[in-house]
Each structure stands twice: as structure tokens, then as C-alpha cells.
Image (cartoon, rainbow, N blue to C red; front, side):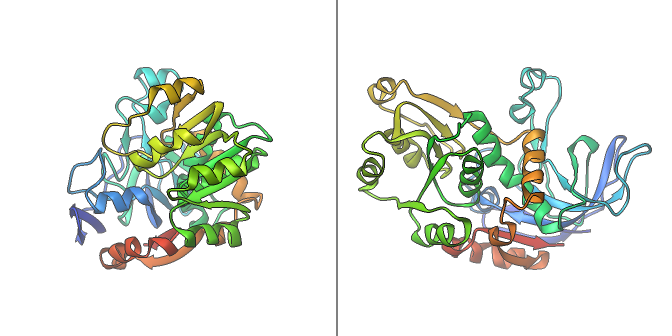
Length: 336
């Protein structure tokens, strides 16, 4: 089967690999669409903290059922999405209802080979019925679930003043779900083109270009009070550290992005706010379902989010181009 392999940083190739044979309890999925995200770009550039090469990337996945176990709820030809967070089910996190933070988690496309291949065998529990969605919409569930989970973790109430730093796909998804909760959302990013896109196509009326004067601009916007909840979706340690200054006294700082290295805050600034610091990792099945229902209801403008398309054969050549054109790329989706 055709497979896209990241052999080492900055090296992608099309390889022919044997098709997987599903084990007991697994569904064989014919992959049809793969969303490309920051994780894939970081893997390609050698900047992911949890990865060994070579690796088949791809965790934003949709496809059709090729083969299902006897008695399965799934049938051949059915459109499905895949939850790529494969948990052990027995560790302390799993026992406490947090399989997204499983001690032994295997994330498709990161810890184990993912979906940039024609066929993929996964546990039936990782398969989500997406029959009412298009293949493109189904491939967007996972990245939107990251933001949905972060907002749920933060328990954002109606009327809250929310800042999302980073207007890429994860930040935009976070902003959308905060807005669904009734929050007043401000987006910040270093790229003015991304902010302009968010204003014109996604209904985010208040945006701020990140820079040296950002704290002063945000203080002016909020009457000096800053934000009840600040979500950092940049994956930048410098941006994460700076985000503390944007949190209102008594507010929350939610770290959605991840980056290698040590994150350092000034303790007096952290304490005087009585800041609640929250890490948000991956997503739960309930978040996937919440995203699915939001797409079905028309609340999520999936056509606007999907900005670029390519064929699987083009991934090795287009990946560096998409990274170089990041100002104008929100969500690229590859077709298998």
C-alpha cells in the first residue's frame, strides 16, 4: 500500500508497505483524507518532543470502513473518523477517566505509525461514526476537538473575557468553542494575515497583532483588567511565559500547545493573581462527539477552515511549501 514516511527531519518519501492485517477487535479503515497540522510540521522539521524516526505521520483522519469485526457496529463503506489517542485503559489516568493523558498513550502518527497510508487498522473504540459528514469534515474533527477539550477543561462561562494567543487551527478551534460558551473572544497572533482571515471568514471581531506593545494594547481593551481565561495555542515557550501577564487577577492560564524545554514564570506575578494554571492535552471521546454535533448543526464553518487541498503523492514536495506559506494556510487536507 502507498505510505508517506518521514524518514528523518526534512526527508519525506512515498514507500510501498504491506497492508495491515486487523487483529481481534480492530477495524480496518481505508484512509481517504488526512489533515495536516502543526504536529506534522514539527515532526517534519525535527521539533517534536515525543517522536522517533522513521515515522508515518497523520492523526487527523477520515476514511471508509474496509473490514469490521463480527458483531461490530460498523459496516463496510461507512464514513468514519478516527480518535488517534490510543490509551492503555488500565493506568491511573485511564482509571480516572482521563485516557487523553494515559501514562502509556500511543498517539497515531506520533508514538506509532499513523494514517498517511492507504489502510490503517485501529481498535473499534477509536472509530467514530461520521456518516452524516463529508470526508473533509470528518478529517477536521480531531483538531477541533483539541480546542473543545481546552475550553471544557477551563470551564469557560458565558460572558467571560477570553484571550486566545495563536490564531492557527488549534487557536481558532479554541476560540470557536469559547464563543459557543458565550465568551467574548479576542484572538492574538504575530501574523496579521491570519488575523484578517479570522475576522473576515470566522466572525472574530476583536484581534490583536502580537508584538512588543501587546500587553498595553490588551490592557486598553479590557480597562486594565485583562482576561478571565488566556489560552496559549502557540507552542512557543516565550509566548507561553508572556501570556501570564495577560491573565486577570483570579483568572486562568490554559496551555494548549506543547514545546520542548522548561517553562518559567515570575513567581510574584503568578501568585499575586492567584492564577489557575491548566495543561490541556489531546481530547476525550466526548469532545469528538461535541465537535461532530457542532459541525452537523452548521455552527462550525468547515468550508472556511479548509483552505488547501493536495493529493497524497504531493505531500513530500508540498509540505515545505505549506510551512513556508503558513501565513495563508489554516487547514490543508491530503486526499488518499
